[in-house]
Image 1 (cartoon, rainbow, N blue to C red):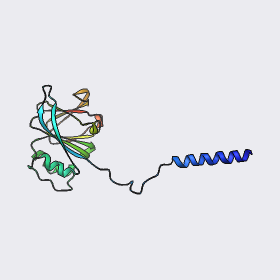
Image 2: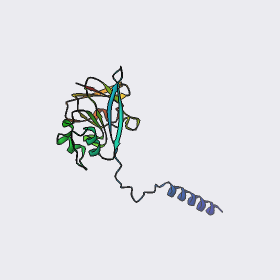
Image 3: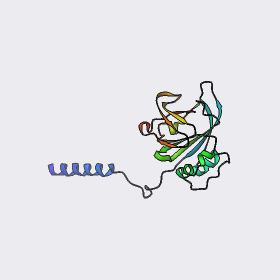
Amino acid sequence: MIRLRYALGAAVIAIVLVSAIPVVAADSAAVPIERHCVHTVVDELDDGQFVTTEECFGSFAAAATYASGGEVTVPAGTTPQEYIANGGAAAASSTLGIHYDYYNGGGSSITVVGSSCSGGYWNTPTWFDNRTSSSYAGCYRLRHFNYPNLGGSSYTTYGSGQTHNLVAFNNKTESVQYLP
């Protein structure tokens, strides 16, 4: 009787342990789907907050072509790094900043398009809260804030025309201010 209890107990434990092992799907090595959006400034509130529209695309090339308003034609398959290295973002005069999910301009992105680097700011959409790891600066200074509406601590990058990794502020951005 005691041996039967031990045998049943061991069988139950084995079943529980086996069922706790995650099942890996055959396509688990699939590349994550990237999202590339363009936020176009259509108005600015009294406190400087940008009111934007959002258009999203399945590729960075499509988003960059749209963001430039036709100033720059971006070939399909162009990476963010190639776009910036070839001067595409600089040629698109209305780009205030491009914010990326990964370091060095990789992963999903949001391009903010407007007409002024005068201190206005933009709040990230909820799907991109605390995901910014690097930013391309169309304005000389980009000040990244930990909370919406310029709240919390901040981290400032300097130098337009460059992509900056937010090492000390990685995944901590919910609003960005665009400054001369």
